[in-house]
Image (cartoon, rainbow, N blue to C red; front, side, top):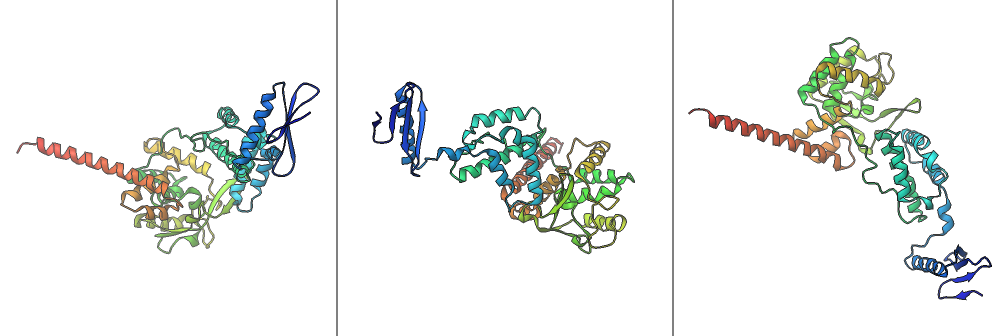
Length: 372
């Protein structure tokens, strides 16, 4: 006969094993079968009762819903931009589905996430792996919000941030001009000279710059209206809003860059308000991969250290910070929705100020050593 306790019951089955049972707060009877040690059954009941007291109790069957089911709901959200949805669908299909599709969310543990991440790192690039990890963390975050699991098992330090092969570096203004002039020296690449100047001195994202139309450029070329961004995802071009709400902005260009832009419009851009400012010679969107090939060759010919195209935006941000721009001004110019990135560029400017101080020290030393 079952022996009653203050919470639940434990009875012995004909097999000699023990069964613990209790009635959950939803009115349903819950049970679990253990081996031949009765204390194990009582210990389990004690943990269930403790969860009830702490209001941490979860219905066991709720955790049986799979990660794949949660992913399907997450990818169908109405608030996802089309380009973002396409990116997430690709990440799920290529890097997550095979491992996680049929796994119950209640069975996902930090150890299992770590094992998956370690294995995936052997065949997945750092950027895609970081993106996939962030997506998995967001999907499981919904299960936490639904109170199906108590905590998100994605707890790997820095796993959501891709580790670059080398730290980002900013070009000097002279290096940026040298690189632009190197492109201008070749008839096949001269149409990209002004794009480099706009990226390096305007701080635009590549997708923002390549989505610009004639109507987005002021009459004198000195002001750009950033209202769109373009990406190539899943075999098609997706044009949408900038990366953040703050991405919608007006950016002022230095007068020399504005003059180059006006000349670029006259030479390379068809008439009409919707003509792409930095499109291909055929008038279509410029793919980042194609530009990357041209860019790297120009870097080599210019004799510069390795530079990635994205570092032109890093250059624009650092040069703007060096002018003494405030955090708010940098955020507005770069289209940042938070101050974290803007502060990073200000720190870079602070480091440059230290270099200036050291150069002044050398000048003082030279003056002291000179004969009177």
